Length: 257
Image 1 (cartoon, rainbow, N blue to C red):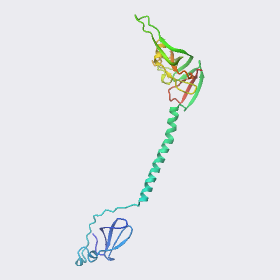
Image 2: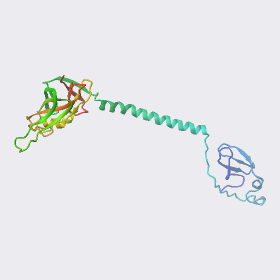
Image 3: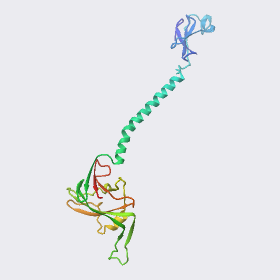
Image 4: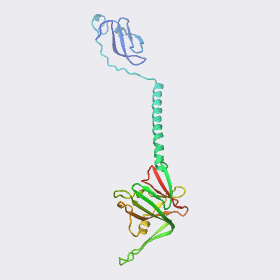
């Protein structure tokens, strides 16, 4: 509540900023409390409003139903949007600058140290000593021999798309507990680092003794297995990668040709 001669907020809005106007009875004007713009008070309000001329001395009770609305010029809104977009793009570029090189180094296999060894050399992989003993790339097909224990011919042949390279590979568990060799890390590549396809069927036919690196190997035991890769006719098998896993910090590459 406001007494006579004091200011009160009314429902009239300022034509400049849209805020509710204050009534100054003594000055006979309505004044914006924010931009201080003044407009003459209507005659009906100047003479003892809101009770007419006989309302002098009666307290003025004003109920304002207007809500102050702050309107910003279009150029200010556009500037704010532009700042927000620039900030977002900058944040994305900053995150991308950190993540992209990390992912690239992981998937390109270029991170970490690379050690190159020759055929016959022994390399330590986890709790195993791994050795490539020889490579034979002269086969076009590998045949599973007939099992004499069966009454039928169960031989089978797998033909290469290019040529088969058979790698004589052995591992020895030099640790103190039974473990399986990380076969997923075995990767053959061409001289240009082209990954060569491993033929699991031909490999199964070649390993007649039924040895399997995936099976647990006891401490002190050595397992020999033939690894078979299908090498296209336009390239050669140059390296066999042996390491803890495909994303290892260090890589051992056996130069086989």
